[in-house]
Image 1 (cartoon, helix red, strand yellow):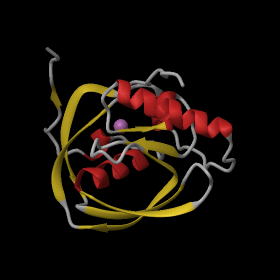
Image 2: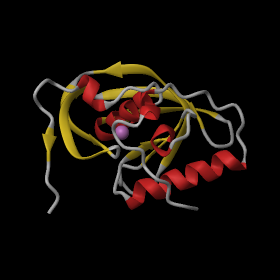
Image 3: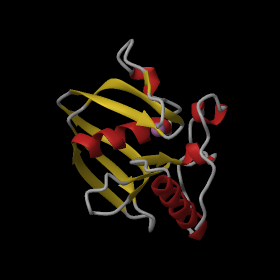
Image 4: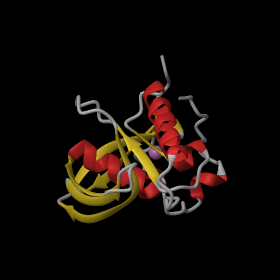
Length: 157
Ligand code: NI
């Protein structure tokens, strides 16, 4: 396992569309392990492969609810229900936060690291994280959909 460098806002790879994963091999597993370690090291709740410079459709999420990190390969959101305003940040935008409208609940399909198709139902923070990370895979960033004027820069202590 290794900590990988997180690409920052302005890096053009963040605007590219990632490719579907077709090979579920040890290399993919190693990438997922590194992404989880990198996310944890930076106290993030999610990380997309683009953010470590890899154009593959894989994201990792951990909302620290005791259930451990999850890895979603080729995720697709199939249902969205409800709406609410949430505050959101991104590891590629350190110390920056904005308000967005996100669905309250979602359903998504994805593959696990063994290439097995799975479904997930999520609400609140987990739903938000799946939306945020899945958008990364299409080059969409949270600032694209923020409510105007809500971007805040927090000075670290
Ligand atoms: Ni992000």
